[in-house]
Image 1 (cartoon, rainbow, N blue to C red):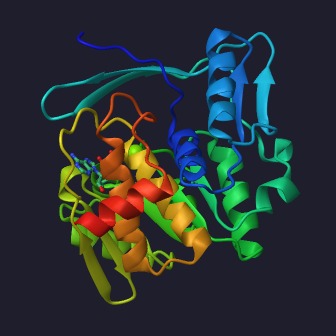
Image 2 (cartoon, rainbow, N blue to C red):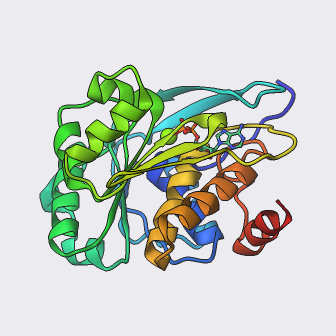
Length: 270
Ligand SMILES: Nc1ncnc2c1ncn2[C@@H]1O[C@H](COP(=O)(O)OP(=O)(O)O)[C@@H](O)[C@H]1O
Ligand SMILES: [Mg+2]
């Protein structure tokens, strides 16, 4: 190994770190163990200014942990992870009012049962929901149909729909109910589907690409922040791609996340 860095991670977690870095207000709902990693997880959120009031420490359990290996020169990453023993939220454990006190809710698949309830409540209350799923589980169909903005990586979209083509997959997901669907394609950018519209947003160039770990998480955070700010879809795709690309400049999921000012400067110079 030529370099080693220890950082907080996770799909929704790193997305909220990105919202905070960009200047937004973010809170995280999750569970940690009462171990060294749990303390590190909480402290790394606090260092970013993410509200951790709803990050619950479960006594006598271990936190989720991942080891990510980034390759040079592509920045491609391989992730090894262990769930830990902290368990999952049940819907009854969620503070509904606190959860809905936002302009956009971002949900990943880690707490699947609670996620179903959270997405349903948010949509009933008119709160937009950005959904990030990676691994298949039984709640996927319900989550994908209820969320307003599923933003999923290509591999998930193809597996979920059984299609072999991303355009067909995106259209199939859109027919299921969401208002907008985005499929991320790594270094090939992202494809967005809304009504009859199909928008391809290329990945934006950064040099060097050190590590793509968390690129998707950061894209999701920026996209959710863009939804909260009322950005139009094209503007939001360009914005989220810039934030995700800039993230790839440094080792780890969070170090490279840019501020709003850096993002604006990067976009203006393109
Ligand atoms: N090498 C890269 N250069 C620039 N941007 C990238 C690169 N890799 C990923 N991204 C950006 O991050 C987004 C999400 O990446 P992707 O790999 O699809 O998600 P995930 O990390 O969830 O698998 C892409 O749509 C793109 O905007
Ligand atoms: Mg991802």
